[in-house]
Image (cartoon, rainbow, N blue to C red; front, side, top):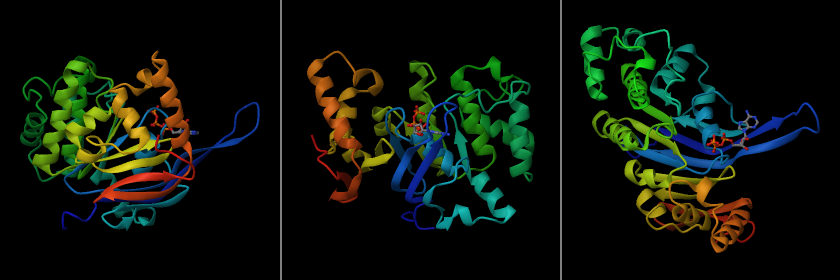
Length: 309
Ligand SMILES: Nc1ncnc2c1ncn2[C@@H]1O[C@H](COP(=O)(O)OP(=O)(O)OP(=O)(O)O)[C@@H](O)[C@H]1O
């Protein structure tokens, strides 16, 4: 497959949730509105946005937890909703693995690391010698191959548990990882090393990574391409060097100025900054009427009303 053919394409993807409270009227939440993005093989695409921007909904649709309300998800050019044969669905589920924010959530506390990984190896690499393969993937994710297999998840640190989750993706021979805030529950001191591991999985194993984060600074470290989301819409996308290095949309500029914790800083005490932030956010909420290419591959949203504050 030529490297400029996307491994994953999202075409005009929208997701509306019906919310039916016990009391009061039913309503609809537009979690995603008309999102189109491409992830190229062996590269990372960072999906950046604050809480509630729709990032996780996006990841969940890719791994089949939610069906799109409209639009298509293409994996290597094939619409995943058309994968009705069990064998195709199995191949897709193997190829696309999810790593969650909470490294505990996908590990069974009653089983050792050896059990978790041997199970994955037996299913997806039946031809390999299990113990040799186990040792190799533990080394690959920088875990001690001698002491780790016999441990239970609670005996590992958060960072080590997250490494086990990446090891599992290697064991099933995943081609693409959807990593939803994979470092945000980890100590600041080890976040960088986990990002470094993801960088290596990409460069040495050719894995494609959809990296979902609220921290725009980390996009620069890992991802060749970045899309910035606000209230379910993409407001800016393109090469990370441009989107993060030279942001053009008001909301991206705001995220950049806010540093790693937009939730805290955007509502900070500086009255001038807060007033400016409010204006930008209001303008960015307007429906995106077009994405304009301002430099090759670098797009910013035009809204039905003024957005570039
Ligand atoms: N199952 C659901 N039912 C109803 N509304 C939902 C559901 N899942 C998400 N939403 C709503 O969709 C919007 C986007 O949520 P989503 O979790 O995708 O955002 P996010 O950017 O990942 O935020 P966070 O980082 O806090 O998870 C939010 O308004 C959320 O309340």
